Image (tube, rainbow, N blue to C red; front, side):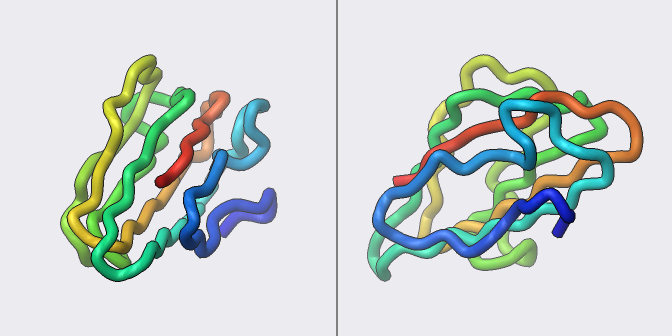
Length: 114
């Protein structure tokens, strides 16, 4: 992960806000942040976004329906997204990876999980 402090292991109960590095200021270049979310067995995870703004087609937040990036990708977010519908897992784990390139950076994102 980057030196600006990003990623980590998130657990129940509900949590957040979780943000990209430096939020609400611009995130850094060449970020690589990974979060794993784990809630009790038999539960699911719901992500709700307060804001999302990354460099379209170059900086991404990938969301996986499981404990790693070997799980199915639920959603890949990029660009300026004003309204993101809640993202729901099918199990009690979710894995997220945020990557940015070497050039343009933007405000990033903020989300909560329940």
